[in-house]
Amino acid sequence: MIKSYGQSVYSEDGYRYGDREEIVKNYVDELKLQNLSVLNISGKEVTAEKFCNCIVDLIPLYNYQVFQDNYKNGKLLELFNANKDLKKLVDCLDENFSNNFKIDYKDVEKLGLTGYEKQSDTKFINQCVQGMSKANKTDNLNVTNNWILDYCECQLSKIKSSNYSIDELQNPKIGGRYHNEVILKCIEHAYNTN
Image 1 (cartoon, rainbow, N blue to C red):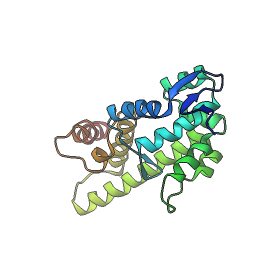
Image 2: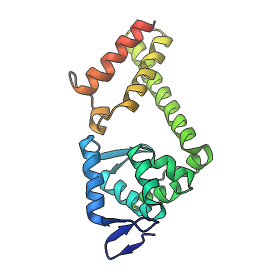
Image 3: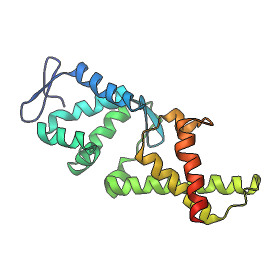
């Protein structure tokens, strides 16, 4: 799939990006600066290196300026989806995982990326509400269903608008950045709105 001469990677319109390994390294370094050495894709973890290798595989399919504009604006997945190349990315990632990992790209194609993201958001909210409802009963938190929903929606909003590592999300430490910026702020938000 790569238009290459040796290890060089070229855009569709002939722009030479440079050496493949160097391009991947630069993308990986950018992700790591955002604390994203591991990405969560459809509930499975993928290393930044694997993800970036798959992105570089798609570079030759696009005009240099189009790719760069979408990359800078954080719209690469939307670009791939609009050009029916999201399946190629998913297939590439799928090859990098064990056989029991399958990204449901049929849902991505059927719903479009925005619809798939909304479906994922709905799942997140539902799981959060279920977990908080259970904690409300077992720990006698004495909060209403509206409070729980406001808390969960706030959490999703803050997670999507910031860059937290997988470890921060799965193991929030008391006094840590995620704990202070998301959990405590969303508790405060839920109390203020109810």
